[in-house]
Length: 357
Image (cartoon, rainbow, N blue to C red):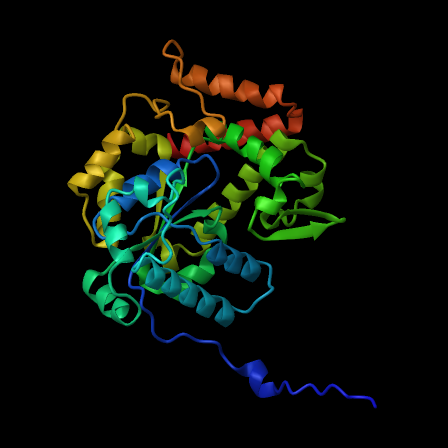
């Protein structure tokens, strides 16, 4: 006996629009940037502002945007999935069902200024009462994202005025060591099993999707060269996105240069207060003091273990800011960056200096 498989898919299904017409979430803040840009410092401060929830991550949202960028899913499906995922995370966060109690993690409740709030939620009523609590408390969902801005149109379209995207930028020289170590430890074949982001395949090799268009360059480069070329590509894509969508979303995107922020944070904090309709509190100021913001020198960071794992070293008091930059540039040479890559590094550093410093 043989069976014939019948395809019941109809034209009506092809034309059906995927929607989510109502949402729980009223406010979302994304802190985005490249590896080593200063998101760890910035998310700690944002999480201490009024009504902002503790730091969380959502690779699901980042991957939906990546798939849309690659043309693998349609606009309506991407936007509906983003709305569903954001609502689900908020819903579960409000009863500590999706809350990190691992003490050493950056997103741990033990690091949050409102630690007890999340403990109380564990033992409070959940499920049916959560929509009412969201409406009353007006929480601001808070994600740290990675290299998202250039691909963020689905989130901005799905959330409308409810989302604020904070882009943290930093001098490329200061991001170089961490990004090189990431290429060695995370992106190399042995490390991809711990990566939960979208990769593309090229000549039987897998590489991060944002290298689409420069696959040959990426694959023939060593780790420090890959870091340089990725910084260039991601910066160019982000700037292009901001130019293209300035009228549509420009008012919801705040670009924060790390160097300016750590020396004088208040212009940026006031702007974020306005966009999120919230306030800097005594708890915010306490966290800022802990992060040594404002500070006397840009390089006067705090010695967190995660910074040390990512190549951070305490600044030498006898070195000027320029000498610190020169020392980090020498790192690229010592790691085998070729002449072409060094020219790119010098160019993106000069462009950053002219634009932000």
